Image (cartoon, rainbow, N blue to C red; front, side):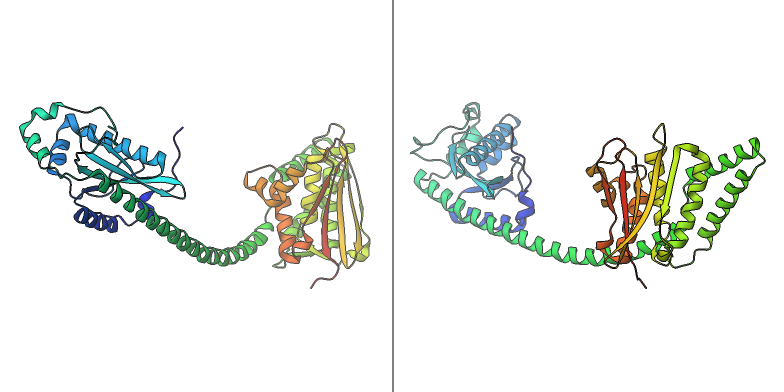
Length: 411
């Protein structure tokens, strides 16, 4: 399987600088040079290419053979990890210098286009072509090719390989350091922007919460009232209407203060449970045990109802025989703990974490937004020590306990 490159030579080196360096190498050594990427595609212009090679590559029948020799030379150099000299299909000596960054091959410098009298230690990289020798013009250009000792060619190849790869590694390290510094600055700016945006979004969410009423619940209420009005002309219908009216008044009269007293929240929950009890009948059982002395304790608006509503939806409505909801409170070390307990089938630890982190909400999971919202508001008002706690054994009828923790005295 081919190695997947995630470092690109053009992202590491300055091609213009490489072109200048390559031209200088060509003048100093009288060799031809060109740089290619990891796929063999040239990234620089030819430097000091011999007239023979230029002419040969103009002809369709030889151009691909020349490219094939370049590609083979680069792959061989890549495998051995150092400069590799070889004889091309036309009989000239070339060499490839692999460009390696952190052990990854990103390209090669191809050089050569000379001949020599001592080529016995070099291998033909591909099958030689002979037909071009019938072309008098090519033969004349071939006779003009520079003759150079193989020993000198190999020495030049090794020097260039060592020096250029050292330079590339250094450039890459400098680039990474610069990117890390830039990322650090960007993260600092993004963190500052995130904090500012979170504050703005928090204000928007808290204001919007005043108008968030579950449409499903509203339709259930209206259907319940309709059915009762049809079948009865009785006190029960009146109770539902009054309870529902009280709930709407509580929501609509809420001012800009996003905290409510526990007494008001309990009154709202009682109205909500009264309506749900009429709708669900014996399938819903509930108790609320919160001493009056805690009525002035502050907590986020509608947070208690959100948890109770979630418990009914998942622990009561989904069970054939219904279920039980308990709301109890106790104080401990200056804090009030309000537990909402159901006897449903529970919830897995993974699901709990997903809801509290917001993953479930972002993925559109049912029921996740309310819990996530309450948890965020508790943290925003009181700090991370007051995040929601959800406990469940995730077993049928073993239930779930959700704990809202708030300071007893909060101004």
